[in-house]
Length: 528
Ligand code: N01
Image 1 (tube, protein in one colour):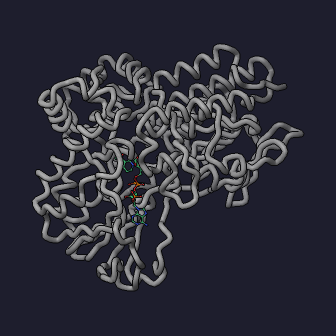
Image 2 (tube, helix red, strand yellow):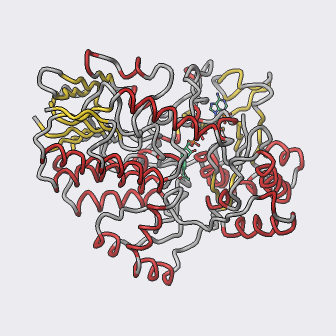
């Protein structure tokens, strides 16, 4: 029997364990991987790198940690982030409470005892007062249901489950299916090794140059000198890191000034581009000005105009599918050994023993890379048989899309918490900032209950309903619902189309969560 079971040992699970330990509580973490790190444990594909800057994408909870750790680049690569996760696990002695290579299969709330009974694929059975899902938003890798994959004679991989020993593509013919962030990072590196690379693209993406570089020691020094203030600003910001944010409408400034602003941001690189004007994600007309700028950039880089046309996104507003950040992506299509295959007009017909068949043409490949994404935000949760009061199944409650209070809890599921769940800023933000906020909120909540001798906390139906409505309302004030994105569940056949994250902003959302707590956990029923 534990005070808490935590599912997952990524950045969320590690910090949750640390906080609960600090409160003197017992916790058991179950982790499917052989090691810590979550996303950074699994996504080892070539070029995997964070698109949030290193000084921002790191824990703030320990000043010693943030002072002593040194990042080597502006944007950290996966191996460095994984080393960091391992360092944190060792520094805070977290491993002894983590069971690796153990996948949680069910979590059932037992009403008589008000405890969660958790079972795993290794036959463990643990009970706990609290069950905390630190399962990640992008952890349930998806392979599309393509005819003939069984017959493929070569090797195939998913970017989100990359072999630990790496893959050498030297001299091989490779096919990459998908052109999202994972593909966009890996394609330039795979192209350098492969004898030929075929990229199967259904929807082109908007991608910003990272302008990655070794971390400037002077910048590092300045940030470290005032890290507390730097972190405070990030917590109060819209997206969990500070970026230059204009107060103007894109339509209110002269065209030349707008171009200069876009050019400045392009040269600076990274995700800050969408903050150039206040209405880029609200007004289609404003958004078009930025999308046009991007398309011109693509056409200026890619020499073959037919290829450039195919690479230009046209069917959704910029930023409404996650903006990508790349190093040399568009330029890769100038290489003689790279072919872009359009699978939008005609979908992939089949995987054959030798390769990929599209529109009657067989593209022969030795290796296939699925960069086809994840069942985002809800996939990993719903893979677990989660049952609340009266054996209510979470999968049934969410049949029409996820319904939560604050993205942290679900009505009918007492003492169950989700870290960065649907209905919270999560994937629209710097994940570590959102993770720390949720973990701190949950830890404070657990303390609150303990101090008052309370046993359970559960969202009320009314509070949940109001939150779901609010999340929908603000989502629909933006252009996001116009894109068939994974934010909308559109990449998974049959998944309800609901804009899942909360777009009100990290700072505003934090305030809301703090207010709820300050008012004695408003919107929750507390029980003995
Ligand atoms: O996955 P995706 P991802 N036939 O879902 C295509 C984060 N991340 O792993 O758009 C052909 O974005 C699909 O096509 P379409 C980041 O938040 C961060 O790349 O559905 N194509 C799409 O092109 C990111 O957004 C970092 O038409 C098929 C691709 O596969 C999220 O993870 C790095 C297909 C999937 O793209 C997910 O990114 C990497 C089919 N049947 C990831 N099925 C950084 O920090 C799917 N596709 C930088």
